Image 1 (cartoon, helix red, strand yellow):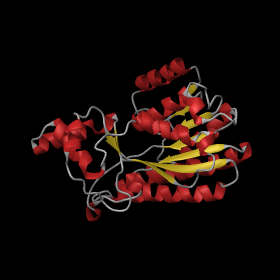
Image 2 (cartoon, one colour):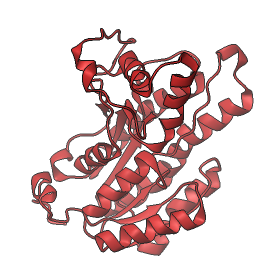
Image 3 (cartoon, helix red, strand yellow):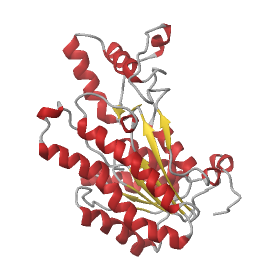
Length: 298
């Protein structure tokens, strides 16, 4: 990669990440897939990871290769198992000879009051949403330091900055992920490696379409009204972010323009809450909210 190449040049078609190798966990759909496709556009070779139908995953993998002329492989490592996560990093380095970008995106969710929260669900959420990132980073950092270049990007959440009821494990994990980001940023400062967290609000993916439909059915309201109600709670812009926008944010963090951005968070949440729940007045702005197609909240 030409070190003088800037993000503007990359956005005009210069392949800023040519020959770089990127792992994106949880990248067979939604936000992770959006990130993978944006990095592929910039020339990065990819290691995809996540759940799904094998045939559909292969179609995604081969489609990315065909569309962008780079190499994409799939590794089904189980993010709930420490050895599997560490093995994903080691296998990638063995296969490609390097690892340049690690995007920790895999995550799961479960909601219940704290006094009713199942222990198994708590352990699973902390394991996948937080511990998996730790295990991946622990193995990736020495390789990246040896290369004198690396980008670690943790996909946290608005819930890494504020809390919501009934989400004890998710909020704890995402706050922990933000804390981990700060520590790794300090420990890698000056090494050519950066570590940052992206904190999305509501994002258009396939995962929340059912949630919006269920809300509409339960309340006896339209899809449009359900979307408005959902966004008005915590996303003042009253617009969803898109996986492509999240991918663009990650791409920026991989660019020379972001060389001195490390150990911090970038929110992609339409001016969402930073320290306490937002109270948003409904106004004429809500008229622009259409029926949701695919959406997901991080």
